[in-house]
Amino acid sequence: MSDKIKVENLSCFYGKHRVLESLNINVVKNEILTIIGPANSGKTSFLRTLNRMNDFNPDYSREGAVYLDNDNIFEMNTEKLRKRVGMLFAMPIPLPMTIYENIVYAPKRLGVVAGKKSDQDAVVEQALKDASLWDEVKDRLDSSAMKLSGGQQQRLCIARILAINPEVILFDEPCSGLDPISTAKVEESMIELKEKYTIVLVTNNVKQASRVGDRTAFFLMGKLVELDKTGTMFVSPKQKQTEDYITGRFG
Amino acid sequence: MFRLNPKLSQKLSYALLFCATIFVIIPVVFILFIIIKNGASAITWEFLTSMPRNGMRSGGILPAILGTLSIVSCAICITLPIGVSAAIYLNEYAKDNLLTRIIKLAIVNLAGVPSVVYGLFGLGIFVMFFKLGVSIIAGALTLSIMELPVIITTARGALNSVPYSFREASMSLGVSRWQTIRYIVLPNALPGILTGAILSIARISGETAPILFTAAAFYVPHLPGSIFDQVMALPYHLFIISTQIPNMPKNIIFGTALVLLMLVLSMSLIAIIARLYFRKRRKW
Image 1 (tube, each protein chain N blue to C red):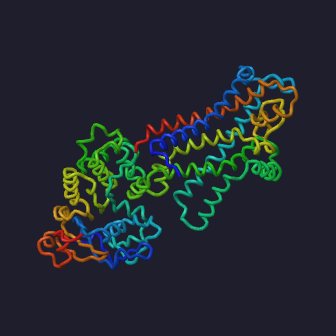
Image 2 (cartoon, one colour):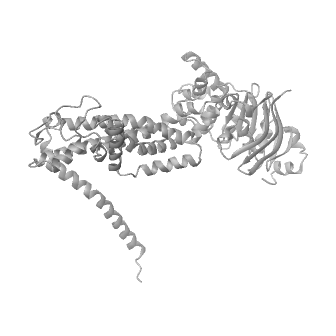
Image 3 (spheres, rainbow over the protein chains, first blue to last red):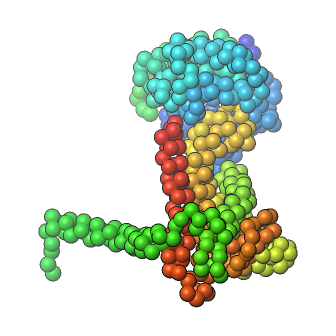
């Protein structure tokens, strides 16, 4: 098994405040790595570092290196990096256009799909099918994406990422605003997606981590406390802090 | 000290606030009433479409209408692209440093400079230094510089109203910042930008001081032919016929005022309708 992402001595700061401390972690190809931990433990900061969305924050700075297939992401062109490493946000953010346009938007702008209508139709259909949304929306592709339910919007956002055919997908608490049934659907598609993609999932829901994660990392106060196979960690955590957190004694 | 009971003080404050609102409306209604009462009789097809005659005491005001329209349309063509570009830069690209803060401060303060100062500035720079003469283009440039801060401010407001999350979602897909602006931010900010532009047109249509030295003429016997012509303009024409010409028929003065007023009001009306239309179509 090869490493898709390798993080070496990564530290992140907002102003002078350190949110991540000398982090060393790897993400294996075609796995789901889940990251759990209480609020302010640096989970989201870590995730947003992986596709450099934090670069937009002027207070943000970092040290260390992150390698994606042996290339340092901090030396890459950010647009090319984000095409390879897609990100799903906590709240679904459909763009203010139709369902169809939402999917073809990025492929068109990145020049991944040609201008031909039939090519675009194929991209839209494939992406929506892979995100298991096709059956629900195939009759109303030209209606506004804003009119979908929260769960459908979140799966639309997944489809939008799939349409640009990334290598890694980052999920930032993707189910925090969803009901249990929508959550189950999103989790189901995540498990299907790991066949083709490498997934990093940040979640506040410890049970979700145990359901979908291949390996789980526990972050606390900007430090990696424990990293292990999900089955192992939830049965016999090595650290006392991990045990306290996953059994709900704090956090 | 006496105290009002809560119910009475509630009624009293309601009455005071209501009176204040009525007080705002009274002058507007009064102005409209007087202008329409005195000027409506002058408004005929001939008045709107013919040249002034008999030392402007009869005939029409066509050259003044056309003059104002050409100056204003020229001005907005100059100021809108520059203003919107500057707003995009300030809102989407500029880092928050000293220079940016100074520019923002300058824009706010430029909006407060008296319009006659812009008039003198235009006379010095465009009419004399660039030798454009007293002409449509000199007046339009002066007006466009005067209106630039307003356009920038309204356009920045419109850009700001597009949620930041849209930009983030777009850029997280690997779409570049400029493409995000071009395909996500601008289309959604356009209604606000357009409304601001229309209201600016309404505002500069009525300006007298900036065109006084730069574009307007007392009387021009022909219609404007090129942007280097001197023209008559409605606000300046109104000033002349109400102060400089003896035995001026009253209904022509008020008729001219009515035409100017209608021009400005119809612009505002278009802006209101456009805003309602776009608000209904807005998808978020």
